[in-house]
Every structure is written in C-alpha cells, then in structure tokens.
Image (cartoon, rainbow, N blue to C red; front, side, top):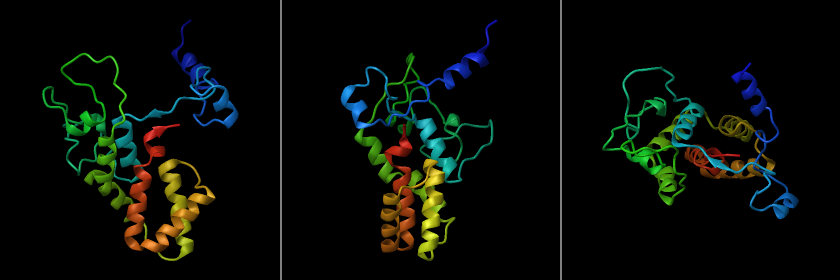
Length: 200
C-alpha cells in the first residue's frame, strides 16, 4: 500500500533532511566541499518566499486568496508573490532580477543566481524600505530597557531566534546613537541580511 504521508514523514524526520548548514571546524577541514553531506548546503530563498516572508514579518502581507494579479514593481503591492502579474513577453523586472524563468521558454528548474544587482535592489528598494518603516512604526523607542525588548522581539520576528549577546550590544549601541530614524534603518538591515535571504 503506497502512502504519500508515510513517505513525507520519513523524509522530513530523517537526519539528512534536518541537517543544518552550520558545522564545526573539524568537519569543514575533513570535508570542505561537503562531498559526504555532513551538513546541508546553504540555499537562497526564491523571490516568492523571500518577498512573502518580508511582508509577513513586517505585518503587511495581504492573505486574501484569488483575485486579479498585481505588479511586483508596485511598491504598495501587499499580495502574495504567487499573484504577481506574469506577462509572456515582458517579465517583471523584480522577477527577472531574481532568476525567475522566462515565461516564453521551457524551464524545468530555475537558475540559481546571486548578483550585485540583487543587493543593490535590497539596499535601495522602496518596497523594502516601506516594509521596514511599517514595522518600525509599531514601536515607540524610549529607554534602554525598552530597546532591549524591541531587539529581542525583532530577532524573534525576523529570524525566529534569540539575539546573541554580541548582536544585542551592537544593536543597543547603534540604536542609542542614531535616535528615532535608527530603528527604521536597523530593521532594514535585518531584512536585507543573508540570514533572512538564505536557508541554513
């Protein structure tokens, strides 16, 4: 008797599937290219998962199902990326930049690409700044005690983990120096970090 649920359970609970890409020095020295799969290879999120995650953690995601497609180049578009407008002859610039396959050709899988243009988009995108502004507006920064609580909450929201003591120190020093605009910039830095864009 074939059971898809059984197969999924076996795969998802296997040690190989649950490997982290973090490894100790001894493992890296023994197997630098990860030929023996002692750790998971780091993978970049595709544009859909990355953009939807950003909308979700900042509280902007529109969870409605169905409806008309929307342009990703529209900064105010809060719909899931699944509902992006795909034109056969004129692919959206954001999708193209992040390796979305051309709709006019057969593409069995996406090309993995990590380009400087993607980082420039992350640094300067009005969409990402809008996400950072929205999340920052939900906090009122006052004393140091509140700042530590805000940093804790941000790390839980954005990275689903606690901040390390070094990350706390850097965040508190920066937020104390920069004033009200600092929180917005700090959230922007968290959203465009490699930890948010890659799956470890």
